[in-house]
Amino acid sequence: MKEFDYIIIGGGCAGLSLAYELEVHEKLKDKTLAIIEPRQQYKKDKTWSFWKVVPHNFDDCVKKNWKNFTINIPGKTNHLECKDYPYQSIDSGLFYEKINYKLKENKNISFFKDIAEINTKNSFIFNSVPEIKKNHLNLWQHFCGVEIETKNNFFDEEIFNLMDFDCEQRESVHFFYTLPYSKNKALIETTWLSRMNDNSQKDYDNQIKEYIEKHLKIKNYEITYKEEGAIPLFYPLYEKEENKINIGTAGGMTRLSTGYTFLNIQEHSKYIRENIENISNSLKFEINKKYQFLDDIFLRVLNENPEMMPDIFFKMFKSSPKTVIKFLSNKSNFLEDLSIIFKMPKWTFVKALFR
Image (tube, rainbow, N blue to C red):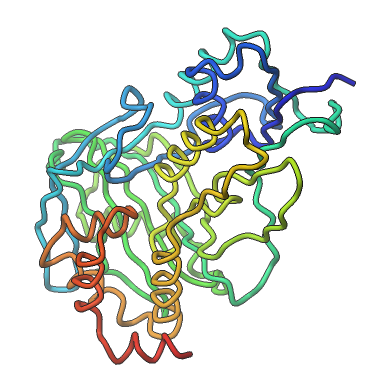
């Protein structure tokens, strides 16, 4: 069986981002790469959104930028700005098309459906497939979204709704999320932060239908696209192995308090590319430990006091959206961290710290 210098297990966001980073910086001119991906074809299946706090390779895959957003709790709405760090939404279909077009130019890059098709003995492996041990206590961010097209103009396309908590909570944390791409097109998503033990939370279609028709009061619309998924709000199992690095969610690139992963993947890919000649001896790339520590406390509060979370998110953003965005994007300094911490209900978080 054929051998390769590098193997990427999983040709999704993390795997393809790394392959693209290596290819465009000519790190594969004299090296061979195998990408293991079982899917038959690439098509749009995800929407990745984030605040642009650092440059990335995929501005031409951005479907829309926003500089204004809202957060809702029953009876109250925060109108906020993010002009310094615009919120971006990437179309996975455009992302896949761009990367695959580029990778096909290099004959040193091959795709396989199964790793059993190649010899892995002398390869360095980048694994993006997380190993998750089932545990009914684990928290997840699970969601379903639909893109709709309305008959009449309805949306303000310059403002997106980050979180609308004016909905049934069912002893968990539940909100709706709306990204208006134009005056009559938008992605509307129902999102839960929970242990996924309550099957009624997974009745996504009815939740979305009720929100669109009863809350937004849109009657004439067509669903043009649907996606759903679940993001682990815990770190997957990790065992250090020689000549192997985990990337993406498998490599701890998901920010546990938010589920944001895309930009962390891009920064990790850049780090690997910069150290590829000595990758076996490079230091582990990870989200700053201060964020891991703070996220752990935050998730304890969420788990024990889900009813408090809508008010916590609402108040957190109210004073300085820029500071909160930097904090949630791993770019805040010590004083900014303190300003976020001081907005939290202190006794609740102190109890969570020592639990």
